[in-house]
Length: 338
Ligand SMILES: *[C@@H]1O[C@H](CO)[C@@H](O)[C@H](O)[C@H]1NC(C)=O
Ligand SMILES: *[C@@H]1O[C@H](CO)[C@@H](O)[C@H](O)[C@H]1NC(C)=O
Image 1 (cartoon, rainbow, N blue to C red):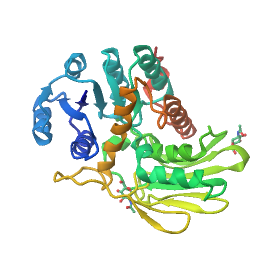
Image 2 (image 1 turned 60 degrees about the vertical axis):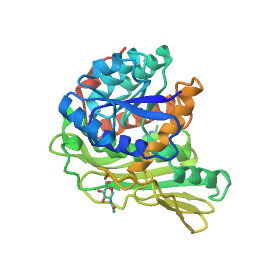
Image 3 (image 1 turned 90 degrees about the horizontal axis):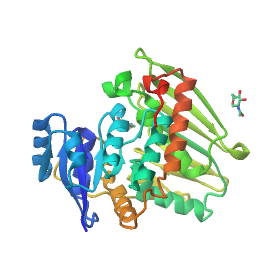
Image 4 (image 1 turned 90 degrees about the vertical axis):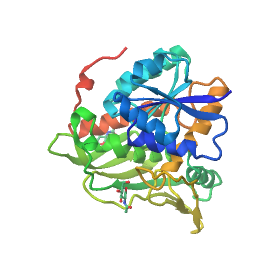
């Protein structure tokens, strides 16, 4: 049976997601069948561009319809919680953009709901499904790197988007881009850090804009992560072991090239589309996670072992800690969630 996707919002990331999925040669039996946005004309234009048969002018109507099996939520951060809740409550599976929520309390509440409703639920940490990440994992498991002891990564650019800075949009460098560095460290070390140290600054709007996070793991293993919404960084991440290193090239969060532990350059080309993407050259990679999701749903699973609910909670708690260490507070931090 076709896995029928409904797209929640007609913004930039939704466009890249649909563009990637529509053109993905390996997508199998999946289709984007509906889109909803608050502005119906925007949704209609989006549907026309991407050949989507149905348009809804409210998220509620899409959630209640029998036309879709799974929702892809690509709105601004502050709406992720309410919208994931809406679709789960209406018995839909949900893939929600990262960061899943503004804080760990909200994420915990949604995971409880997904479990109760027995619906698949995942934070769209698409990096985890990158062929380059699979290759890195293979090299680590084969012992080529020896004991991995250090992860060093940079993600930064002089950002101009309000999304990054406005508190009411859930702005925050760690939530917007830092999550990618936190997830690569967690992907490599597979344990919760015993200590987190953040040095950085808040901008004029009182959200974090530039920081270095040091994660300390067992036996002195650590990650040093530079997150920056004010400086252009090289966006590389290197994984250092006692026998060798592995480098994920820019953009490390879904790289097209890596340098293996033997020094060889490896390529991971992606499919193409005649429609241009809004974000980087790696946007076609957004489609890879859907293969895993379709497989999990067909097997009756509510989470993927490659990006589990537990993993989402670890990342959410790390982001809470980084924000706290830099004094960034959201109204949602004062609320309780069921
Ligand atoms: C974490 O690191 C800070 C700063 O170095 C230190 O003050 C604190 O004791 C450490 N906490 C733990 C649990 O090791
Ligand atoms: C790092 O990533 C950002 C965001 O995608 C991009 O604007 C910037 O140019 C990248 N840096 C390099 C050196 O390519």
